[in-house]
Image 1: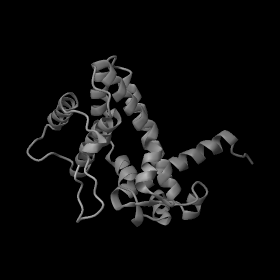
Image 2: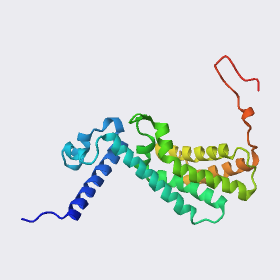
Image 3: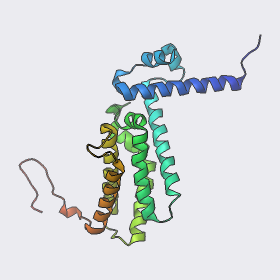
Image 4: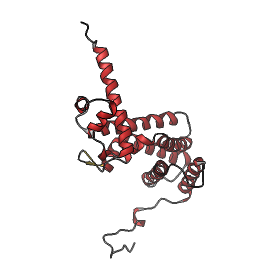
Length: 226
């Protein structure tokens, strides 16, 4: 009687783990995280749900691994694109395009990370996404600072402008994933390029807003006099 070698067992274990993640990713994206059970995932890959527990203690851990994997791919994509461009401005434009392209090319993974449950194992989704996305956003902010220095842009409140650029690009990617197409405009590249051009024009022309310019609101009946 022959026994399976340790390397063969490890290979089989990793393959099964990959099957679980792939099935869960597809089911979360198609049906929503809350509607999918471990039993359903197990049935999808032809195993009992007890097998799932050998790899993941619960559904939240599956989503956590899928999310970390997607963010990791986004970081790799960002770094690969950035390495191809010497000037900071070119890197900013190229990585902005790359973010949108990645999201629209991987809608299933994007939905799992950003359209998942509000409560993720005791952590609100916003904080959870911020935590795992910090390495990617940190790269982007540093790139924006490099652009401001290289292009001679005013340095006041650059972090606010970096956030504005990031949210605009990310928002466009989200809309494209949700909607799929831009109405009456089959070439979505035009929308992406116009968005980047508009952002750049704004960065150059619009002065950085001081905090005193932001209205303070402490209730519906009270407005700031500033």
